[in-house]
Image (spheres, protein in one colour):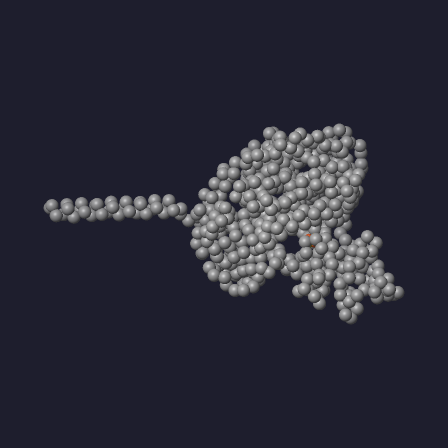
Length: 591
Ligand code: FES
């Protein structure tokens, strides 16, 4: 369905300059390219990443081109092709249709999908404790919709992203029990702070058939082998954009993110016409076409700092610039929050999905550089632009009641902040695999062949480091610029280059198990520098989200001890043979 969004009069059209024009009119923003012959190309001025606005790029290398640059995180768009050039080869803006009037005006039309959530349930008064949100930890919340209880994204023990993220809050003592007693679990996406294997194993051990709901995406949120490994037997994949009814009063709808449509989802939960929207950490939920009626509460991430950028880029930028970038990113995060509050017209806000810490001592550099927003900062920011909006900062076991739009009062923060994490019981598992994994160049080549990322202008320089990232264990290069990636020991050519200093144990473990590189990149296990400074989205996205579904079967090499034991046993056998031989000779001589 096409919808008219804006009309330019003949005079306004004449006044457009040749090149890029940014136009805001009737509440709509356009990016219009006027070519030398007067013809137009246009798209909505709304960045695919997180909804920023474009302006003509003033970078020296873009002079005389039709490149626009997003004012938020500086992604670049070619306004002629409407393809992003940085990050390259991934996103595209949809062109607007242009209808020329007889009077010489131009009307711009946008392709719009039917909004599946438009019709709300009849709104009825709520009783106390009828529709509530109880916080357990990070993004794990218990939603009570009348008779039904749904828990989101349970992460209650152990690390996420291999060994990079640790829980900031101590979940309530009965948290696992509460999850097991829920009617269902909703998992928003496959990141391990949402799909947390350590937690789900505990849940599966007690209640393997607990109903799990996930949205139907091109890539499965819970791959079959992960499901089997965890021991969950009742995973329900439901279509996105469709209501799932719990009863006549309660329902939920899972929707997709626009930046990572094959990865991330958000959910609307509705009870008696009251809506809770849990955006979790979607960058651009449904391209910001979100419900704006009957929304009582929104929940979103707020913290920023939930990726390796910029805190793991000090090799490239230096610490001072990293801190500056981190602060900029924090501010932009709050703007996204402001956008969502404005678009949904929600009555209340709960900051969530930002309660983690890179507390492992070997990541102390990240702890210093990874500046994040506190929930208090997020709430203060919102209050400035939305003074009537209520906000509740959650704490483990605390409950927000939609009847009163009030939440429980928090105890002193020190009473629920985690102080120890049992690091070694998790890191030792990684180390025991890593010491025998990916030892030879052939194994590395086999791995990159399995990954299947090729035909991309990039040389990846892997520098495997010790635990403290102080000394080099080994290094090698992978050239992706041909039909088949090549693992080599010397830099193969000049060109686009990405150096990754990475903790050797984590790297080898991730490769051996065929795990996502999110564990390395979001999990703070690598320190990155890139030249030239290009965001290689296609590369990151492939290694993070598009690895082949069939897991590789790499052999583990023998450990040094095993090799020594083998040598000893060979030596022992030789001794026995020699002894038998000598005895046989003596025996023969004596005869
Ligand atoms: S680059 Fe446009 S919003 Fe991030």
